[in-house]
Length: 315
Image (cartoon, rainbow, N blue to C red; front, top):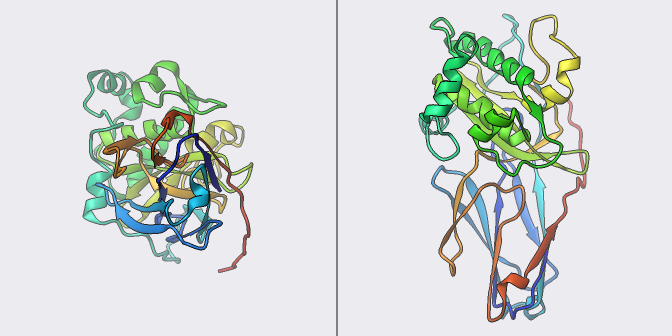
């Protein structure tokens, strides 16, 4: 639920909502909008520069005059969440999620938060080269061994902030040896990308604990598919559990049905229609704009998340 109040005379409200993507643990999602009005909002699916699906929502006040001083709208997400676990059994063939060439290019690219060629970042990789460099033999399924080595390195050398990080940049995380789930997932993905292993941060919310914001990593292995890795959960809970009998670390290659994925990676260029193109880092809060005569600084907003219904399906 999103709610906003303003001191100006609103003419239009504009909001963007992420459409849940297909992941290694989540089916494609459905997003519906409701608000206390006879006239529905104008909704349009749009794609950003990386092909991420968003829902653009416009509420014209001339059709909804009671929204002149504020707006209330409810976004409902419906997704299929799967429990996944990475294992090897020669007698069992599990279908995997294919990746398009465009996805792989994006998941190995530099730029934005991924400052892969930055001298300070490269120096950090080099200073820990024995652990962070990928061996020539670590290709195809052996790439999982490399990814887990990096995963273990971060879990042993970094901590998780209790609150949201003000600065998730790679250099800040490396300097402070700590960040929130998104900052640590970014670090994991950046190191893997440096060694040409496709990786991306998945932003979303935990489907428990008040639906707190959370982020995990996914990396791609040929003939296996996208593999989830929750580095923050590993640091918070997994270190006390130790390795499993098969040598796999907790929260690596596994995902329970407790995480709602909202989008991949950060950095969105959004058309505000009236105020030009604005950059939004992520959708852990709902970006919106209101136009009309008056003081735009008087606008206040809040959002609340809750799980409404869960249906368990045995497969």
